[in-house]
Image (tube, rainbow, N blue to C red; front, side):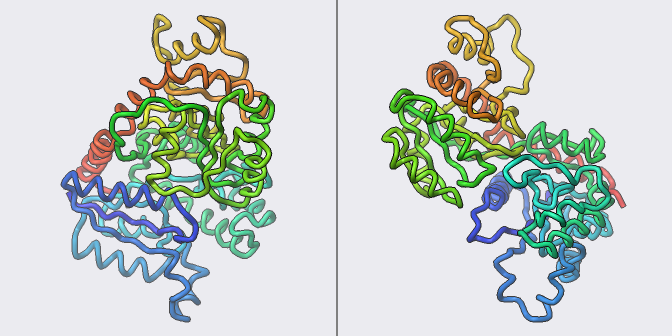
Length: 422
């Protein structure tokens, strides 16, 4: 099997989980015997481009003629079975879908954000969830609010690109939705069920989980949509030391808030930006990982890393978080499933879970409000040991590279036997 993986890498100065996932997926496919032909561009190339190439940049999200020429040559020379697209902006353009179809090559796209509809891709503006552009032929609100790179001109270009390529996106042969929430987003956009497959990302297996540590770990970009304010507000509602230690890792515009909280309270520790070894150590030192997103977060990789290490997760009930912790799955009968065990622990042997808190297979989800998160913190701490084995089991069953790579190869195999959409 021969697969073209097409991706426009985000700038290295802007750490991107999507870049990491694409690199990891290429490695996993290669290890499984798939021949991968990378068709990669990087936004870091832009400063060194010629004047002529830079002059064409404003139209590249819509068409990107050089990318189409290079892709046509690659498809003609290698005759791949499938083209797998990740991020097309700005140097590839969604037009690569049309180019692949012109060569008779079916297209898979992994949906990492909401940019079929939203110019910023995250359905979040001015500190709150925003879906003002849903259902519009042209995303005028995105232009008005300068949603793309805080530029009216670039927002107008992106909104126009989304309008121009509505038909392009609806011609993709198979969509990979990273969670059930992304599948719902695609259905709402008009993609039929038979062209949507839910397949999450994988993270490498860290091996047998270490014994649970104590306290909580928050590891994310320190920005408003990631819920820094929400978490600190909820944490301050408990006496110092009542919940163990809150470790916070990452960097971003709200770093001063985290540093101030660490200076204010001895039970808050700021770890800074961590490398892979630092991430592993921080996870192992903790009992519960927190994902306090205030937007419909697609697939926070930190959650999968937590499950792989046997750490349950406390998250907000937004985006893909309920799917990741198994809070959107049907409950097991007879009250013996992991969610029922967690609920019994939290409720003191069978009392109902407090309002606004829902137990899942591998953690808990709450409304994105300080009071709800504050109420859930002691519940999660008390129930961590009961859910730790279920967290690891969910990783092995759903997010292990062997499982996810097989699922991806099956998607390719199904498409390579089916004529692509013209």
